[in-house]
Length: 444
Image (cartoon, rainbow, N blue to C red; front, side):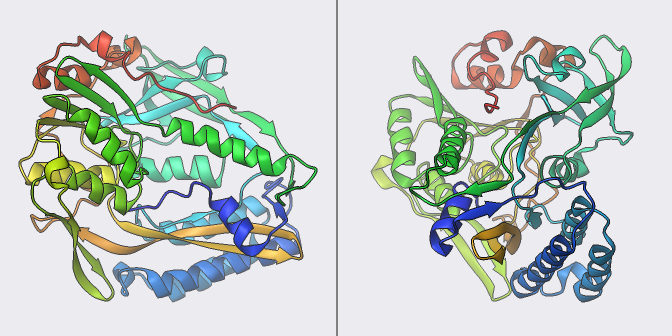
């Protein structure tokens, strides 16, 4: 499962004694010789890390050495830094592995598209629009995305599309062909908002500059978005879990609250996964016996991933788990374990099918105090469930399928949560359910 990289830059700075951090800057400008050398080093380091650590030494039949030579030649011919980064990213995405990807250096600017889109059932829809953005004037929740920049958006490849738009090649605008809930089809161009920052950041503690503290503040804002939210109503607790990044004590605290109720609705929608330790603590909090979550398959062989029961401290009531196409990795493993062990009911939409186990490998290059920090997530294990199958590119199929219609998305209704509440013995109509855990935008 992908380990989330919260605090990554601060950790690297502290360990290496890095004082200055140089990020990507103006990537579309003509590439300089120094930047090309750095891009070549990035590809070389990532290639070495892949060969040493990828779980499948055969690389699914891909000749990675031959591929490396081809992509190194492309880096040498790249005309812009952005082209070079796209080439490094493409080298890894050729494996078509959800947990193996290039993480480029941080940019000197922030950007915001002003919208969120997601697969709902088999189609892609606009699900959120930031108030006051250019997107808010042109597209709306419930609009079906027919095409984006001329390409269709399908479930099987949306993760790569979002990866390139958000990590590798931010676009100054996106052109949509959308279908409104009324059936009207229109074409619109949505402008991206950019916020320019400093190209050179001073991360030395005690510096007279504010870069160090601004980075901490940014991290705190991200942590707030990952906080646990819950609602208690009579005998039912509704718990919105945004990621598997909790310490054991935090899991125990939430389960302690849940134990006061007869039913728990655990909302794992849009949960990207997180730490193996959090997954094992969560699973162990719902069973009176140890449970094998999956078999971990690495180059060294196989070993079981076990979740130890919390004994008398487990939640024994009715459990309903909500998933959707944004549920990934640890969220999917949890939901599927609940299904296989017949411990609860899974409700919602089919999950993303992004289930491998990966480690993040950080690198840095530069001279003196001026460095570029980058890295790669590399899958080191496949995970086989108790039924002998894996979930990669398959996902979890809910026991009770509930997906919102375009009209319900436009109205902000949540029929899946309403259905889960019904199964738990509570009553929320879709409109009321849609207001329980309102979407929160990251501050700009």
